Length: 405
Ligand SMILES: Nc1ncnc2c1ncn2[C@@H]1O[C@H](COP(=O)(O)OP(=O)(O)OP(=O)(O)O)[C@@H](O)[C@H]1O
Ligand SMILES: [Mg+2]
Image (cartoon, rainbow, N blue to C red; front, top):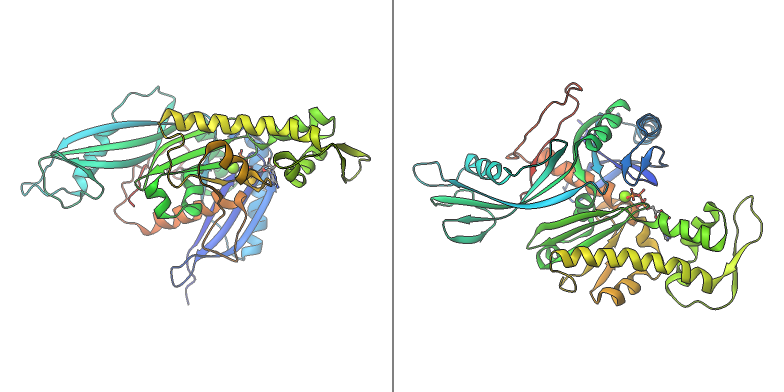
């Protein structure tokens, strides 16, 4: 019997590399996890590769472990892109329908997307994803699936997501040097959304907030499509560093305090002294009240910045399905209640769905989402592929994808 093809996802986080190998279940309902490795990262700063050599070594090490665990060889991976260099632009394009019978064809869709992409970008920036928001045929707007419909003028409204080319190239080159083929790269928050949101939330209006170690990524959805994205250069390591400085403890102690004492950061805190056990250190103790004061201020700041992003697109306080928190920071105790109060929106924590055995950890949302998106790419014909070679042989493939719901 032939084995199902395996799909591999690699989330290069600032704190941890998450490498997951899975195969789709025979009934098509979810994914069987064959191997999973989480390794502390080296060579990444604020979501961007800054030491390619160190990171290559870490990825190779993780690859070896995950292949051993899965008992299968991994040839290609789906990889995330992160960093505050990522941006999005809304744009529109217009073409005349080309067929004599006026039925809209695949070629018309390709042409109209190309037309919508003709905005000027500095030479060192590139578009990595194009998300059609809606089509307008003659004067009929709000069309999501125009293929085969009749008309004379076809207009597309798109959201284009892009980033700084040298950073994107460096990330893919690093993965290639570790011996892997980069099948495709996806925006991290788009990948995470794929596994933490349901289609109703995307339809109603929702924001995914991925609280990572050094970045907070936001992806906002409405009427089924992404309408905005941004990456803020701030995350849980900032909170940890504040704790280390403010309570005069080591970084390791601060990390432990952050992960274990969340209830005192965002919940009730008394004047009592608390202590944590950190190997090799003695007497790590502090006042609950001091911890709360120090750490809470930074978390407040992160969510004020998130609200500012929502204000930019006039959605502050206006998303019916609210906010879904994910990423390692979403594990902070009492965060849901805190964000609810602050934003006056419904808030929940989102972790990967449809993986067996269950991967109920919010820090695995991006890697699980990469597998879901990867499986969709591999299945879907009718993708519009713009693959191009960037001088590193055939291994770098950049696919500018049209997200079709
Ligand atoms: N229980 C917890 N409470 C608070 N923070 C936590 C908890 N567990 C983990 N974290 C924090 O989550 C962060 C790691 O999350 P994650 O793995 O999502 O980050 P990353 O993907 O490596 O980083 P980035 O996305 O910014 O590149 C660490 O900074 C860690 O301190
Ligand atoms: Mg991350």
